[in-house]
Length: 107
Length: 113
Image (cartoon, rainbow over all chains, first blue to last red; front, side):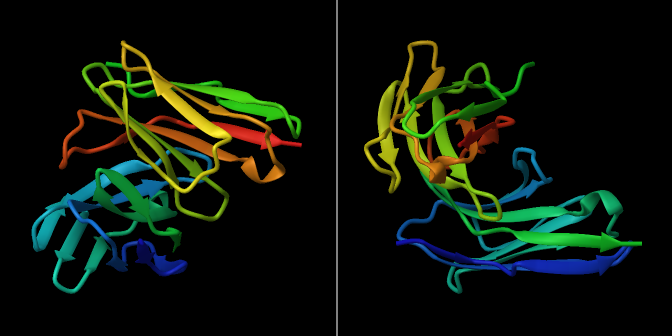
């Protein structure tokens, strides 16, 4: 079975940093994706981790520990447009998603 | 370069009817996957097709079926619609293989009344 957990909601101030944690227990694992989804829109790709460690992409970074079944997405220098749902997804030929974390950025 | 396109964007159906949703993958992509996203939840895997063969199926009833055509486009069919089938249906395309990024279409918003 697949079990992917992430917090439901997080709130932060513009310019701050937020870390979204994701823990997973899955029957297969080829890698872990993070997607951003604005309300009513399709998910858009943010990052992909296959090996342990930190992947940095501009204001967004993602970390993976396969032995711990743990990942996090780090959003730096938060902007209002970052208010969205962030989805953690384990890849094993298909994507198994967590329920998503709604991030609200306040001025 | 066109991304993943889905049609229609919105649809309203009555309980008991059937519906066909369509997806055109990114040019060169051979794998298409379908997901159902109910409001407030993450997308749930329905089907994956690769090179016109079904590669996997999620935990959905037999009322859900799909196919992939020689040009790699795909259709998702749902028969005997239930109110609970109301959701955003997402299509994702990729090159295929183990470590390839999936690109999502804008989705079809299905409402069953």
